[in-house]
Image (tube, rainbow, N blue to C red; front, side, top):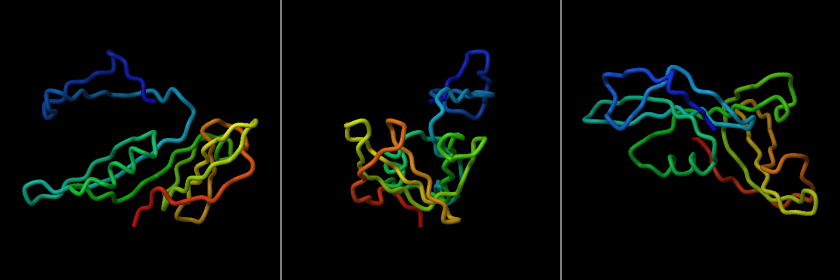
Length: 142
């Protein structure tokens, strides 16, 4: 999802030796992604950070981690998904998943529910899936 270049690598004196820092990264695929703010406690101090995820499963795994608290999740969607003329970022309350049929094949469908009540649907196979099944909530933020 994110592409980096050697020329963008920067020195970070505070980074763990296994970490790399970049001055920029390229979003190669025009697919939704998540901007996740979280906090964690370390030796009695709370620190916050931001992660960028592409997969819903990554959000689910982070939510299971008892050492972190997810404070906000934004979904970033390209124009063809949010039906506008540009990328948009919206604060997420939950994600629902269901199955539909697209060109005769089963296709997973996600519905991103934003804090303002907007629902954005997205099928991994693209296009408009039909014959939706019941949706279940697969992620929510409290």
